[in-house]
Length: 164
Length: 219
Image 1 (tube, rainbow over the protein chains, first blue to last red):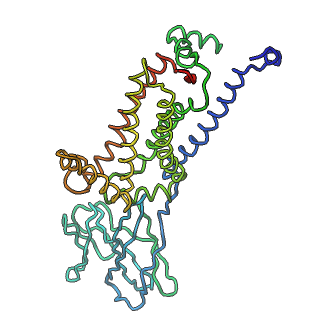
Image 2: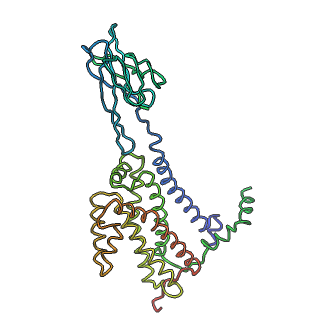
Image 3: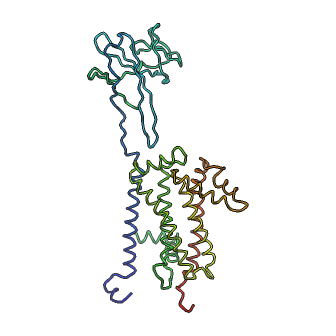
């Protein structure tokens, strides 16, 4: 380095150090910030956890007994797709409204079936019994069958499915 | 305050001595070709970092490898960037390592007392090629599958030991899930461990022996 550079107060060494620091910092940021976003991406994503699902026309369903509607919902986590099967009992009531019950037993999530001769839902796993409106009659279930929020749109029953 | 803190640390860790030994070395007057080694070091560190980040989402299984790479490329924020740097950095690293070797060869920098630096450099070149070969299979697409089928078949043509080498590389007679997992293991653990271990030896020798000057025409 020359004397004049010294007099200007910026040596060659200081200049190179400065350039290196700026370049190194730029590269670190240019790579580091995207890497952080990359790592956080799935955590920051909001997946819709509820949906209104149309079950179908409910006019003309036999009154006073449950009719089972089934459907499957697909869910994608990362690159993996999984399917969840839903079963929903719809019971037309005398006042023109509907009872909309899940067929999942509140004990250990087995599926209950309607036994018309006994007028009860029966869970095959641990012999839980439920009445037509879902109330527990006997067995281990801790609470009545779950109900779905629902509405009628253009003659179709639409239920509100909230995923766990 | 900072000066006192640095002084306190330096007294215990000997940082300035390390700095002076590693970076304030005396070097002969050289040209830009002498930056190829540093470029290789920079690329290998970049490859390691981007590779570590790729394992956040990559799954080494035939059912999921392609899907997970596809997920990185299309769904993850900056996934295209991380994988892009790893992909092109790999190609660039092979090129730069090769140029680094050519520079050493043509300047005669492999001669006494730097023979062991050269030998470790040859191993580092082979490991770099091995990393390229094993990494190529991991996306598990058609190109990866058939390139590895061909590559391992070529290894199988070696005299006497060929069929054994082919089976050892594939983990059996065909390209299967076992091939994918052993290539993955080699790519992210065995070869990088060997690479960075040897880089340590290589750099120690460079620091210990210094770099050679550009030979004069009459040398």
